[in-house]
Length: 276
Image (cartoon, rainbow, N blue to C red; front, side, top):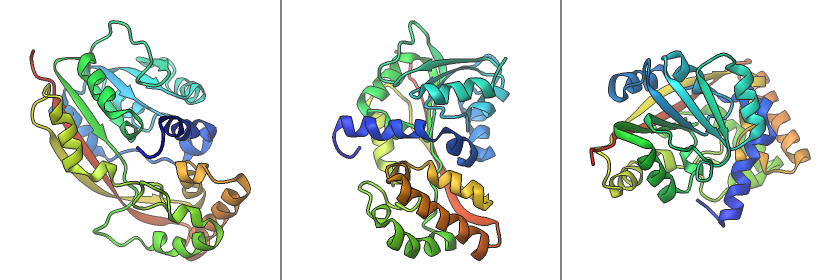
């Protein structure tokens, strides 16, 4: 987490300012994620599931489709409204507020899931609260979409860099990110750190970990929406952000034939709470 706590809180609240873009542009997660949740973590009918930071529901729909009863804690009231409208008449309860502050009463869960969100939660408090909210034998799961793959070429990313160097150079030097073009950091891929944090609680069994490689395919408008939902882009002045997004969309349409394929990774971490 970079900067002061106030700066951190301000950054994570930016996502609520571009709900339409977030909903239209952020991709879901590969099927393998849900296969692992079913086979390892008890995802299915009658599962009491807590989702941290659902956004506009990129994972929520799949979790509900499994038959789970989902309680979602969402920071943004506007995002929560979008989530509610998308999943009317589903077994979904929404609590609005920061995970470290929201009142969940005496609720306990069989499975806690955080999809591309736990890096916005204060780590020590967040892990302790998850431990407290899980029943013995319940599962704590974290996963992310990482928009890139060091082992595979990414022509669109490479073509975009010189454009941003001219139009929005601040995006190429964002503290804490390994690929500022797409607003991602190494946090999700730092296996040693993520496992060590969970192990330090001394309340979980061995952490199971897998990195799922997949390919994202995007039309220009979808790609524009996705980039406009990344926090470093949201932090740009609106005029500069619009110019950069216009250039990005032209690049996708004119130089990439209207379909951009990009290499992505989805690292997932799973650990079961030990009996007292």
